[in-house]
Image (cartoon, rainbow, N blue to C red; front, side, top):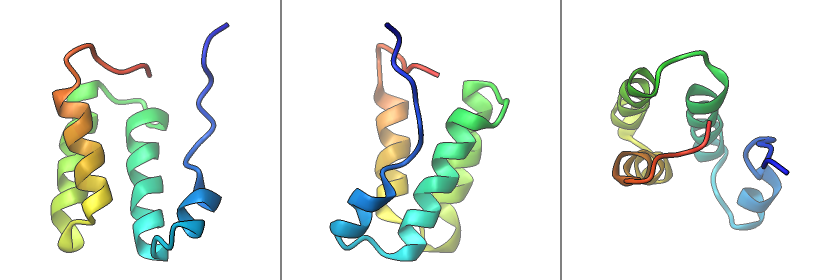
Length: 76
């Protein structure tokens, strides 16, 4: 059985006191990587722009770094 992606665990993020702006940025990052029809390199480029713009939320930067150093790749 294949894994199915459903989205960001917003409720868990709220319980951990993530700000609304951070949750919104993570949702945008998720959509950019998994929902937009882009090549992986294009998605990474857009995530870099998202991470650098608007002060760069730390969780988005961590998300991007994880994708960049994943030597076995990611499932999309």
